Length: 579
Ligand code: DGT
Ligand code: CA
Ligand code: CA
Ligand code: ZN
Image (cartoon, rainbow, N blue to C red; front, top):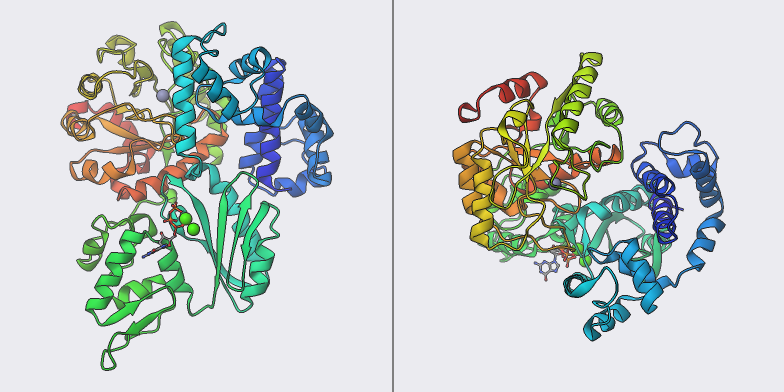
């Protein structure tokens, strides 16, 4: 049993209970338990196996006992019995955006649909539209969701596989025959979506290591296993490749398999100009009289230095100007997780968060942060249980009380205010003026033209009280396309109005896209790394946000949450135009 598979079982139980119309509090307990397992700081699998989960917040007695059975025996009869009540293909339907338990249940009970293929046929035949609560629009949306699902069938979001990669690396690093282990490829470059994990290890026993790789607990099927490489597929469908190389080859292999292909092509061309051919094994002089590299290559930095370049961080290796900057010694010093002092866009049970204000604050303090911004939904976000003015003011009072109780920590009172169709805001200015800051976001009416949507967002940014723009395009990676916006215009408007743009680092969003940050930074637009956390566990996604900020060339000084509490207080107290 691994941490991920424990959490997955709890999540699946939550879904199954929802399908059975069970008590929502019970459903929530399992979902919350899954989050706790995923993010617990210690070895939760060992603790569960030893029945030592008592006192862990988020894991009640029922979950404690089930986790113990699961971790110590590998299965949970309660889960198996629940699962047996439904056909296995039914679970695939949950991967489609917009299909929740209620709709899945109706599809199953009315039309006996229990697979994506069957659902597609039924939509094409028009029978889904005729179901109560569905209609032609829903049917068209389902077909669009199926098309997206097929298009991204072999892709995973970076956030979804990060814990899995860490777990597998931990095991590999304990192997007595492995001296170095890492994940290369698009994962190491922090691409927002990834097709496979490319593991790389240094060893003197490559064949044995390949063999052992195929027996990792996450592995479902072995695709290939040779003397220096192996490929497997995990239970969640993710393919993982392993390359086993010698310690001397390791820096060359790491550089090569990190990519990107475009970066490597440009790097090899540069090497050739210096009389060196570069591949995954090493440098070879292209002519008998060409000079070999001056110094030995122990790591990637040595390799880049041998080509007259500063070390290029993996996130930057997309051939978007990094080689030129490295040659001119002008690479940015990228932000690091340790630089973050707080974060701004987070939800509580006052809107659609899973955890209370008090719990969110306790977690932020635990994480060593100096401040936490609370930004719950405004009234127009019905499905997000948006707050009206009265509830917002209640929350403001609760935050003031909590601030008084925590003199060493600061809770900033904000809100995530809806940008209405015409670019006006869901709360009036006098209400917004009472807050420390405000995040403005689009949550509905996505079907505007690019020009209309851009105008709508720019109008919101022109408001004196809008501190930052939330999730610029509303995209849900692999699930929902971005609504059309003119990024260049929005960035210009942010610069002109001194509005911060958020890097929403909820794993499904990673919005604004990394490709636009360098431009924003160069125009003086400030970034805020915001997890949009709907639970205490998800506050930890700021780590993912930092990876994407780095990919966007951002430095510490480009990001508001690297500033101290006092600096942020001063920032919020300064009129927008003077910031
Ligand atoms: P992915 O897996 O599609 O998310 O993206 P990558 O970049 O991880 O691609 P992958 O797994 O096919 O290959 C890993 C790295 O190996 C890639 O970033 C660069 C290197 N590589 C693979 N094939 C080639 C190639 O044909 N030429 C060059 N120059 N490099 C390659
Ligand atoms: Ca890859
Ligand atoms: Ca690969
Ligand atoms: Zn939002």
